[in-house]
Length: 449
Image (cartoon, rainbow, N blue to C red):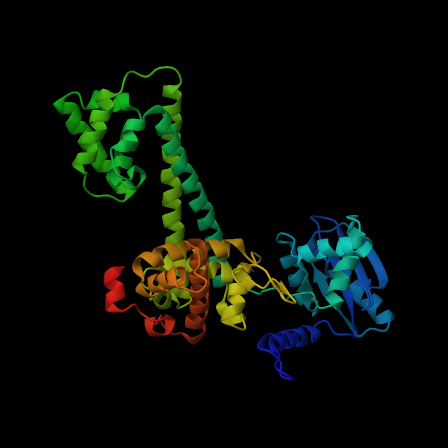
């Protein structure tokens, strides 16, 4: 759509961002590009036409680059520049040391995305030739073209929340893997046990029984053979239940497991080894679940420290831990210029695919932080089950007459809406408001749902 001489909102924001970057990557400054490694740093001092003014390779750790920056400043001054700006790729944790050294030297530092360097490497001479010297020059060229971003200087509490979020994501993955392994192994060695509860791996009684008998039906059958053994078994399960979050034994499940154990034939072939492995997998599942709970508690402590606990707990259907997992990946939302920028950071923004009269399929970009997309995706599942506004939005998106969305597309749209609303809530310190979040379903729609 043409707006005449008016700038679009995107144009204005892009111009503002480029203006801010140009205040750092000044034309009167030389660029000090560093190709980082563990103990070998390749440094190139260039002008704004990518001409290399000086080059140096040093065998030091990134945290000890202070003298190298002093040397680079001398080279820039000798070439007629008034200062320097440091640029590097965000390689591992090393870029943080470079930013710290640059700050101590009174120099600004910027980062260049590795993907841009990889694409520029091929555009340089249409080959995939790679060397540290070439990469340093390409980093400098991309910096002068303002294909850079300012590294985030996190508050200690936000930095801690990010590390806790990564830890929780790892433990969730391990918990899910161990859970699936228990199911697969028992399905091979003792399938009848999986039929003793509607959702066995969600049943605290079922899990406690399996932990007590080491996933072995022969042990359960032997303990339940006498009244004395059954009493001892019940006492052991009662002591084990709190480890899984339960309080009382669900008798029908215990009875069904005993019946399945008694009916199970004697172990043969590889079954004993399979059951033993299932016992180890069950222990892995218990430890990962305990670690998840511990990390979640610590994340809520950080939210309290940041005075965000009340806001995080104000969205029906979404726990404060889910919000903490999202904020662990976004960092402080106030650093984003708009709510749409958070969605773009997650890679959930739609990307246009059109040219002339051709209009292709619009998909999400898939760029940004994968763990942020995953955290928002997980939060949506609980929201659709317990939040009427989001559930109404989902039904509308999937049943509307014009361009109805698939199940996954609708969930992605709601995940993006959740990120936008979280940004607004935190930047304005306002709790979640259903009237502002979207239209609530009518009485008829609620009854039908």
